[in-house]
Image (cartoon, rainbow, N blue to C red; front, side):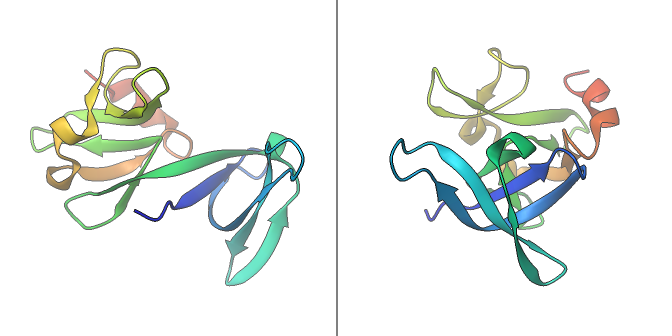
Length: 128
């Protein structure tokens, strides 16, 4: 799997696809990203101004790439959030620390209904 990223621009409050990530060559810390906006490549200066989101390597039933922070609706209408679990080193769906592996849920049967940043009103419906 080739990793794919997108970023949430905290100030502008919008999601943007990543063209290239920028790392500190000495420390290896994440520094920022070049992003694509309206067909042009621009630079988001610092990591403090954005949230980096990694793709899960999975696709939903409409063949859309599933990212951390996405909200999925399962075939029963239940909405759950995708997140990365550092302890388990994997993507999970559900409530933090009580979710199930993304492979267990089968995102290919679910549909992306939004994400936790652009559609925060849907968070209230997560795990109802």
